[in-house]
Length: 199
Image (cartoon, rainbow, N blue to C red; front, top):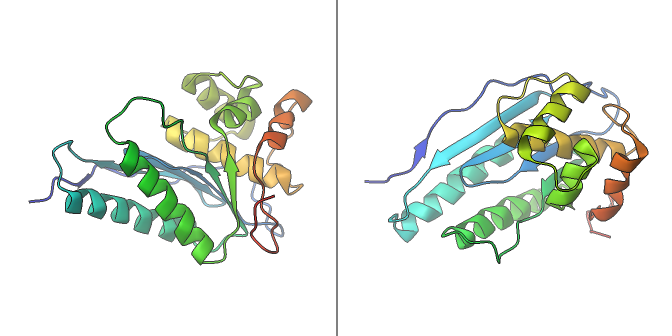
């Protein structure tokens, strides 16, 4: 019997102003335990649980399930902004699964002709708070304060920040940020919207 469990999903929450006539941007904080998604419709989270003893088939099914939900939630957008993977030197027994999930989601987005931007974790934190080393709680507080969003988890806060960065890059910021925060945009990989190719 599979040990895969979808724990719960939070209800969509306000994700800031919606540029109705502008670009459609999604922010994705990809994670095995709780992928955060932010779109014009709000934020949500895709939490799952597995066990270290799971078979390769169970692990594959978990990755596919998360990917299916994420791609469906994102829908059709002009740009998807994903947080880059953490360093592979960091300890953890799920390194291969995390990498597999990240690549599967990115591959499926690109396969649907959705340009993908990659944001290093430090750039996401710097854009939110002004400090690349900011802790999760500081990012949540900054996101709630700046965008007036209801964010029950740091996964959703990160996703909202990623979406805000994408809109800012395209000239349609959800809210103005100090120049020091905005400087974080320069450290990201942005695709050519017309071709989807990273620059």
